[in-house]
Length: 106
Image (cartoon, rainbow, N blue to C red; front, top):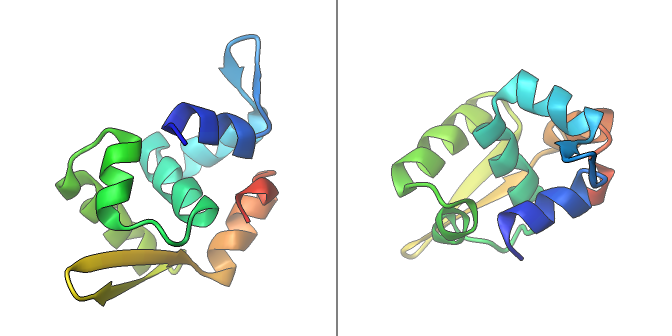
């Protein structure tokens, strides 16, 4: 699913061309790219870091940097399987998403 469509469905849609209030608050808290990483990891826990690069349209270094901050903050975990890196949202990460009305990310 393209990034914009996922964010639209998970974030409750857009109003008058602007993201829903919960998305705005989450993006203000984490930064928009980091929030997008968290939302995408929650929506597709099978996605690899490479999948995130393609879906978000950012570099591998950008995904790695944002995943590192999310991991240090306790919002995601990371595991390496062979040559793939996969992330999973923690209970704290889901609580942050839920608090911002992103319960559709589960």
